[in-house]
Length: 418
Image 1 (cartoon, rainbow, N blue to C red):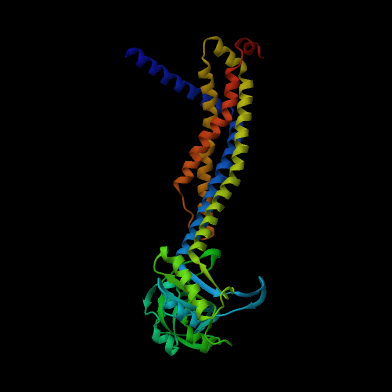
Image 2: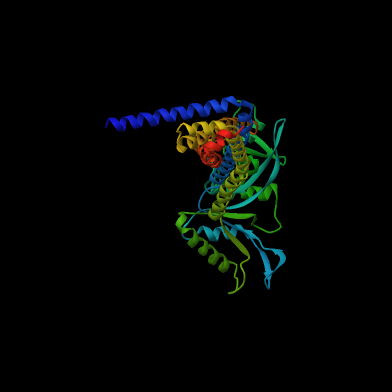
């Protein structure tokens, strides 16, 4: 037991000695050590920034998709084809199609959509808003909530009333601070509308689009008073919400069969409409965000390779400069493991210092960028793990070859080195 304790004490003492000598060696060549760590600092800083950028984009995609609603199918016009070639004539989607879809199994909500951009005026203030015309179900399919006031009703659609729901941005831009927009009359294309409700804020979507600059009105009102259509009941597209994600494929088939029947399409004829699964689109967009994060981090990692080469070069120079010192140590009985540990630990220390500085610098710069671009840049545990992993892996990878070279030096030849 005493012998075992003595061996342990010797190992601890040797480890402390190796660590102290490695630190002294780094301090004695401050400029060279700084230039060596600079490559790792830049590399880790770049990786941290790119990882943060990738996560920010991923969060923006997730937030935007969350605002779209879930379990959605989009029915929209399709180009007419002749013998497999597009003829250039596009079909239409109507509110009649929405009525057909609404009766189908698994369908929870259906909203035919017409939209555009129009000038909105209140008093001396004006703003260009995104005007969406639909049915009451649009609050559900579009994942909207009412913060204040009341939603549109089926009666509003049937009577083509002059009620609208407005987003938070519209309220802030048109009305003075503290002034309620509820019950006030705004003008869209110089036509008066009464604000019936204020929509709960959604924030920015992908591409920096402000989802709160939206005005929702009955689809009949839009068609009769804002923009007519040369085709009765024509809509841009129809959103259908399925009751459960596992029923999406079945609901899609039901919609295709029902619309083919209502449109009297012959067997074998191509569909003159499209049914897009928005769940698949959402998953694709999330995958794009993930791949983008990996790509950015991979590109930034190239600078880490450059940094590790710099550490290896410095350690090789250090081995050459300390050849005589290595010879003396070997001559008085120093073991190869001791010499190997010293040079390897020195490389790891340099890499560790550079990684920590790079991590702190990368986090600081990413947060500054977040403030400048008004984005929430996350600080994740992944960043810290990357920094520590880089410190160990790069340190070992760049130090192992010089350390092995030092252990293979012949003591007699080393002592003769001038």
